[in-house]
Length: 302
Image 1 (cartoon, rainbow, N blue to C red):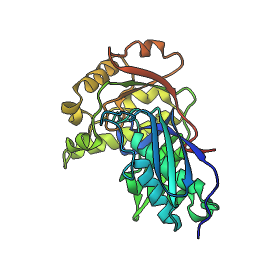
Image 2 (image 1 turned 90 degrees about the vertical axis):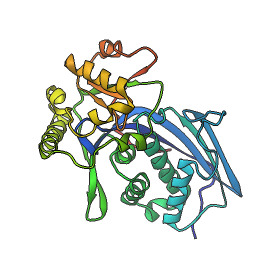
Image 3 (image 1 turned 30 degrees about the vertical axis):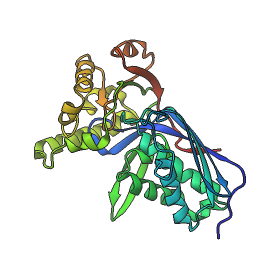
Image 4 (image 1 turned 180 degrees about the vertical axis):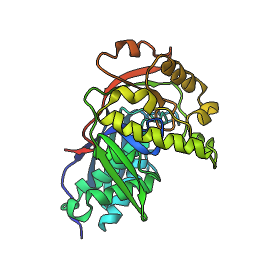
């Protein structure tokens, strides 16, 4: 039987940007914008507190019951370790915008599995990092966001022989990012629903080549980022759901800026180097702009 840790445990989890143009469902990058969460075992009941993103009190906020995504992830991780606590308190301070393509759901899932492991004495022995990656990717359905949220940095991920894999790669220190966040979100299910079931072989081949180039560009040759971030498979196809996003991507790229749709959108991510003030000045009216670094650390328990 599991022994639970007394007192609260805390975790911070980074935002992530997946796809990065041609790396559809396989490439992801952790960014220096973090959610902070705290959890503790109670004698009974469930208490969920939310500040920041998702804290709406008019019916627009995230649920404050067992259906809360962090709670669901915690329950799954507790089940993996063979025990459920009698009660829970969860407090979330959310800085990652919701439904914007910056990995908020993956951050929630990763936070949940890491918090649950941290609340169980000897949790590292009961649930390894590899087991948490498997569980988090199963819950999310794909690994491109959960892998960098858990591991940090730049991660290549996928599925092989019925198991998820994630491989970290270094990032050139000259690489930074600016994200342009629109006021309204787009649900991932809507964005994915716009993608065709079949793509031309030439487009798939072109995307494969650019994805390979993107790994080289991010790890040591950022001068190739503009060419390396060209996509044929998913960005233009999502334009009906986010026309302003695609317009900004095209305008930035026309001026030589390596810009992409972040994840399923509608946030735009633009790679920069050094001073990004001119790039930040391109932020459309009503949008939010954040200059971010590549975050080398994933989920941090402490």
